[in-house]
Length: 466
Ligand code: PFF
Image (cartoon, rainbow, N blue to C red; front, side, top):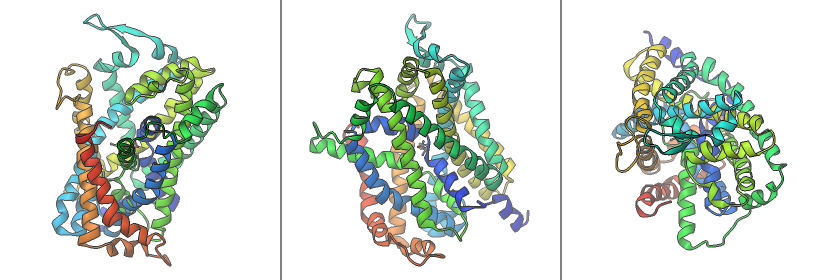
């Protein structure tokens, strides 16, 4: 294949808004909708919100800008991009390719669970999802969610459907697939979340929940808890903004040179943070009303979304309808994120092996299917298997989010801050611009604050249980 043909297969975004919505689509995902609200509830409501927003506009901004600028400057997928920045740092490219390849399978398995809930609510089965109890082979009584994931067939089918839905956009390419899909889905997502938030806030007693969510509650805030809050906000930012998984480098490589990097990054961040804050305005007051003010119901993990929320919807007027709208919203958010994960891996296969987009995509689907099945089986036939005490899915989540991603981000800061120097990024930011408004902030972040935060994320799981 000739070089220019290859370049055209690689593709690029056709508009600035297309790029922003696609990157925001990647950032807005399960992290915003279930992870952010429960962390906010756990770490003093407004205190967490405040710390998070400060981090988003400082450290999150610097990391996202770095990745997008590396992508746009090199015009390559992650493997080629890190190599082009500095040959000695080539292994970082490999790490940045392995991370999304490991996340995509389990993300699609969870996407399948969300799809299942969406179909249950749309077909009027919300009541069942919230109250039904099932008797297992060992005579135990378990709720709908545990029963669903402990089977093999249904989670597999929903996983495959979600994986195939994801691949449609990637098959179609950057402009005709990812950009088109994002331009349609992201406004729908925004409308849905605003609509559901407005509805929830009109319910009786929502005001108390909202106060709990928005007002800083420093009761019981010891210095240790404050440090934990900072580490949790750092980790969440990382997770939420799709940083250190190769995605932003890949999307950056498709970005047009004439579009402003600095303001695009700001807009992506605003989109992501607004959706996270709105998700909290739905979940915290709703759970608060339902539980009669019991804060422990806002506990972590999939339990909140798959066990507690269906109960909340069942108890709420027009809950069946609101539940359906909510799970459509979560499906869309998860879909645009998994598209970005798949595109990152596909771009690597295309570039590394010189395969066509279609062939690369088929290979990625196949490998994702095999790896994803490990997670599906981890809850059913292989539920006895534990890796370092973790279920298979949790293990994939742990090694990527708690180890590989902070390591990649830390080394990227070293590469940019001390090896090629921040000038490398500044030159890219300055294309078509009069000045780099956040230049000083950017330098301080990349050279000092970001590496410290990364080390903190790396160390906290081993020091405290946050
Ligand atoms: N940023 C997305 C989210 O908040 O869900 C996507 C994502 C985050 C994917 C973390 C995977 C992951 F481990």
